[in-house]
Image (tube, rainbow, N blue to C red; front, side):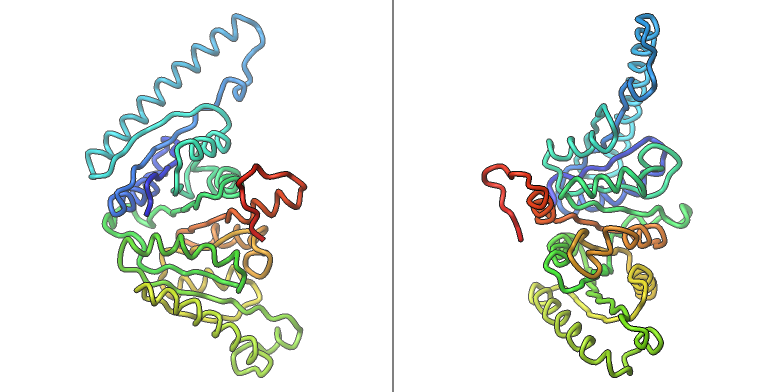
Length: 324
C-alpha cells in the first residue's frame, strides 16, 4: 500500500490530471500527497558576474521564488478543500531531475505521478529528459498519466479498471507485477497479461498468424508461461486474462492491443535482458509513451541498478544486495 505519493508540478495547469490521479490513489490507500515544484538556481539564468548585477539577480530570483511558493501553497489548499487526502507542498532548488530524485529519496516516496503533456517546465519536458531521467535514476515506480481528451467530460471517480502488462518471460519484466497488484487492490481491476511474438525469419514475416505451423511451439510456450503467471494473480483474487499477439513492432502491438481492449493503463518494467525489456532501452518506451493515449506505469527494478553497478565495477555499500 502506498504511503507517500509525489506529484511534480510546474504551475502550467497541465499537471492537473496527475494531481487528480494522485489524489484518487491517496484517498483509496490513505497515502500522503506531496506537490513538488523545482525552482532552478541563478546559475541556470546566466547571472552576471559583477557584484551589482549579482545582487539584482539574487533579489529577482528570491521574488520569483516567493511568488512560486505562494502559488504552490494555494494549489495545495485547493486540493485539500476538494478531497480527504493529506496534501502538502514543497519547493526545491536546483536542476529539475536531480532535485526531484533527491526529494523522492529523502522523503521515502513510493510512487511518482507525473503528467505527460504541457507547454513548459516539467510538463513540456515530461516525455523527454525529466521523466526519462527520473525513470533511469530511481527505482521508484513512475506513473505517467495523460490529460483527458476533453476537459468538458471529467471523470472524477475513475482510476484504472483495465491494466495491460506486457511480459517477455524474463524475471526483470515480471518485477512490475507487485506494482500492478498494489494498484489493483485499490478497486475493481482487470489485469491483462500480454506476450508479443515477433517474427524472426523472412518466412515468418511473410506468413504471420496462429495458423502458421512454425508458430505452434512459440505460441504454446507463451501461453503456458502466461497461464502460470495468471494463476498466481487469480489465487490472490484478481481478474486476470492472457493474450498472445503477433507483431514486427512490439511497441505498436502493445499500443494497438491496449486500444482494442480499452485499457487505461500499461504497466511495464524497463531495462530487462530480452524481448520487451531489452527494447525498452531505446525506441519501444518512446513509441508506447508518445503514441498511446493510455497512461504508463514504468518501473526500473532495483536489480537493474545493482547489475549496472556491478558491470561498471562499482563496489556496492555493505548490505545492498546484488540481484542477478
